[in-house]
Length: 120
Image 1 (cartoon, rainbow, N blue to C red):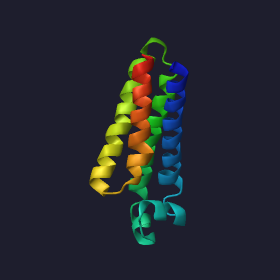
Image 2 (cartoon, rainbow, N blue to C red):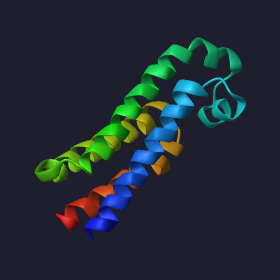
Image 3 (cartoon, helix red, strand yellow):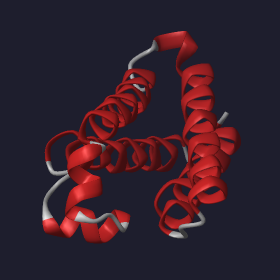
């Protein structure tokens, strides 16, 4: 079960790496704007804010990857960073009223968290 849990942690980390790329480097591109529901003007005006947000998603990904190599503290790091992803996803759903964060952040983090808790 530990292998399954670690694979799920990696998948959550990869999602956040992808979000980092979207928010830091592709924020004003058509497909990214469509995904986040922004106009060209809004995307340009919020580009610095999105880049900062992307950086934080990168920190979540880095923490999840680090948790795989954290030795005796690995379990605590996995739980902590998965809870951070869960809270960030819930906040995004509540504040933006968009549903993608529910399926992109919340559900995967819950599944990974349950697997990590079961694997111990």
